[in-house]
Image (tube, rainbow, N blue to C red; front, side, top):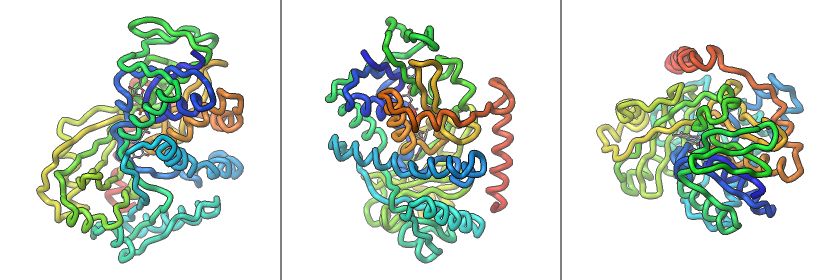
Length: 399
Ligand SMILES: Cc1cc2nc3c(=O)[nH]c(=O)nc-3n(C[C@H](O)[C@H](O)[C@H](O)COP(=O)(O)OP(=O)(O)OC[C@H]3O[C@@H](n4cnc5c(N)ncnc54)[C@H](O)[C@@H]3O)c2cc1C
């Protein structure tokens, strides 16, 4: 075995597919089932960009780094579209995503974002005033928005399953229900310890993201698991569905603690939101999400909600993904901070580049400084929760 990858989410699958395509023998170890983590249960929104905006990256790391990051922001979506086309994956891919503004401040943030992205060579964004937004989202909650023609949405679990099948066709081997309990000699020649045995691979790649827990204690301080929730309405039928979201775009608003929603292929409204630092699952997901759903679409008051679920993403303190090495043969990528459908695919490719002898892009990201969450391992979740109350208050006051 050339490469042993831990975690069969999008990061692990993307790295594995890129590596297998370049002729490497790959084993993918997954504690549960393929796509069981965030990748199989997310909102399916292809949102280009990182959680940290290009302006923040420029301020923090300089113009050259912002140009480097800017050049890659649409690459993840391109990888997804390439996998779907090359491997004939049936996952209900649709074009367009829309950012919605609740107030003038949000609108001017979108104007700046469009100008910034255009400066970095991305010209797929169209600002929408209140009337123009109605072609995409029929909700009085918003005063405008921005369409990203290069975004889109899809059925995330079906994408993960399709990628896994493609990997197996390329000779990769997937071990499900195979939890990695620890790793010895991670800085040298790593040996992976599972309940059933030990695996030695020339190269180890860690893609457990928010679910890795303490299996690799060196990585635990880099990210904080956070949960977010989604509900799926009863089937709406074509006429109601296209009345609410006429262009079938996916939508996210501009708040810190945001709502995100879209239609499924069978015409349910999938409505997500909230985040809980530490990654706990609330007892009553419907009670958390229904009020916001009904604020966006009052016509759906009392609509049946057939499904509800929660999942964990990995937040980094800088909101920049965490790439790096714990030794010459041990790589990791994690921490997309809630914007990981495209990021996981991109950073899977960067992992593969580094392992196959083209480390430049990986190394550049890995060199960015990372920061611990205040409060240490024990108190970082409550500490961050207090911080998020502040941002929630700002959202509520219209900042
Ligand atoms: C509810 C929800 C909605 C979201 N919506 C969106 C969205 O619409 N758009 C967007 O861009 N992003 C979204 N995200 C974020 C996005 O889903 C993630 O950033 C992305 O899927 C991360 O992929 P990953 O492969 O790194 O991690 P994961 O998909 O979490 O995969 C990690 C895998 O590693 C396995 N694993 C962990 N530890 C071990 C171990 N010790 N041994 C073996 N296996 C292990 C886990 O079981 C898991 O399957 C959302 C996240 C959630 C939770």
